[in-house]
Image 1 (tube, chains in turn red, blue, cyan, brown):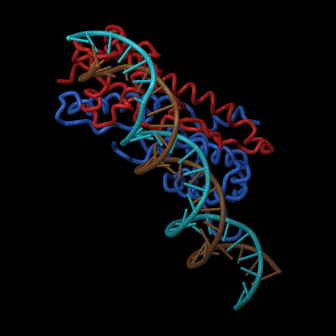
Image 2 (cartoon, protein in one colour):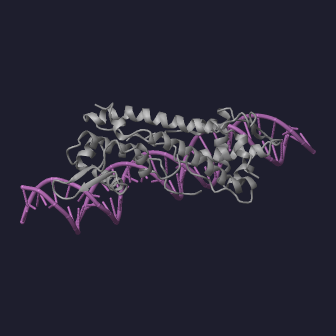
Image 3 (cartoon, chains in turn purple, red, yellow, orange):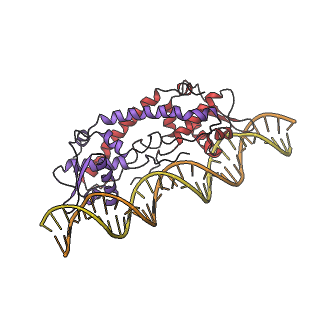
Length: 141
Length: 141
DNA sequence: TTGTACTGTAATGATTTTTATTACAGTTAT
DNA sequence: ATAACTGTAATAAAAATCATTACAGTACAA
């Protein structure tokens, strides 16, 4: 088996929740404790994801007392595909095997799988890119 | 957290590999040992997936000596979306949190997430349904 | 009618992945 | 100086996934 880190987790939902909270509290810097409280998870996990979102240019942060995080750009400029790309780890169709190269099918199947995986993920991303953070947040509250 | 079984695994690749082998050996019943050999995995795992594929009407099987499995229908009638549905366990975007219901955002976000998740998965499935097993297998060998 | 070659399935264990927890150095406001 | 934060790492706990073993049941074939 190929054992790469995979997308079998709660990170997309977590990241989107974080950004949605920021959308609703535009004027304040949010602390990781506040965010963690809204989600019932540990603040260290939130800080870890915040760190990742910052690296991807979706939020800005300020250290020290009175610090926290804020959206790095307008919610109309953030697409759900940006969030997906920030948390993406592997294909939505899962992992691939490492088949027996002595078998003609085993030898070639992964190349064909790659094509399908890429195609399918592109369709997903296209859908996600049509939804902005602002549009996602609108129905909430 | 919601801890449901998730789609972070090799099952899609495994199922498609199984069906591809059957495509290339149309006239024979394949044994789980042969299939396992082509994939470098344990035969019991293959039998388990075969059992699932049979429940979903994609293969037929015959017990006893000389037994094995075969495609239940023409490879032109099997779509990759059928395979996806057979192995699907959870959303390609991952799991959802169980947010704090005392928070207005936490209270409503999962309903909105459901809409997005369904939408995105529908796009994936549409893409997968455009590819038949026969079309997938054609470039191999 | 007995042996052989299979499927079908369950039970158990090992491994990998994911999440939680704790800790603390560094930064900034007051 | 102290308090309130971020940033990050180390470690542990929990969950999901995969591997292995075992064996009952079925069907063919001699």
